[in-house]
Length: 171
Image 1 (cartoon, rainbow, N blue to C red):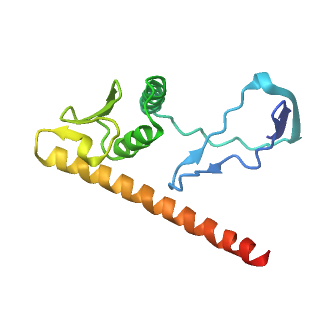
Image 2 (image 1 turned 30 degrees about the vertical axis):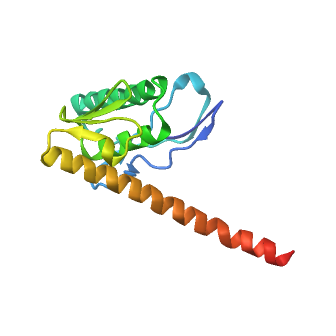
């Protein structure tokens, strides 16, 4: 059965039983969940006579684990904001966390693998810990993070400057 749903947030029309995965992974499909409290009307567009294929089994444990990890990450971000951590510190934390999951806040300090502490203003020289591969690796991540930020700022400045030159020469 194909159906159209409408409600407070607009209409949703599933066109096909299987929605290809937006992740691009084969043998995966996206699942669309609708909160029926927001559905005001259901209109049957056409009835299907064939039996739909069985639903793929969901790994509930994996989904619960992913939800828990996402919640922990959001709580960590909320903690950083409430602790008054600078935007630069929050961005650095996210960059490190992409590579090293064992990363947490301790007041305004970033603690990585229980061995490395990065204190404000979160520069390479603020990375402290026992000399070794962990400290070296974290310092490289911090260096690359700020190098990438500088490159992005440079690209933004270059994108703005030509338009300013055009307006100054055209007046």
